[in-house]
Length: 71
Image 1 (cartoon, rainbow, N blue to C red):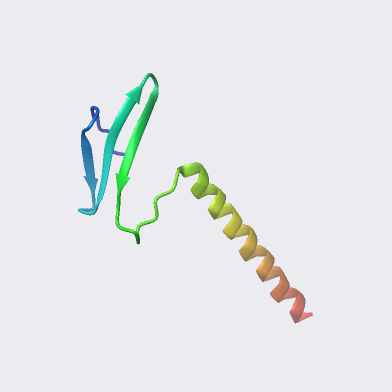
Image 2: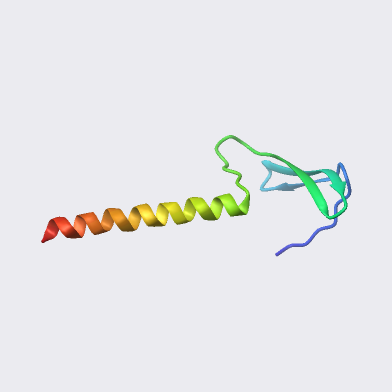
């Protein structure tokens, strides 16, 4: 993991096409702005994990249906 220090209105660039800017700092909260191409999905981690779990559940139930059809 790369750890960086940034101040308000400072940014960092990832892979030449994603820019992360610190918009606001209030106490222990930091507001971050992300500029990325439309084809690059950007999720909060908790939402990303929910999507992954839903995909895993759907995949498993689909595979069970395929197995049931075999018998």
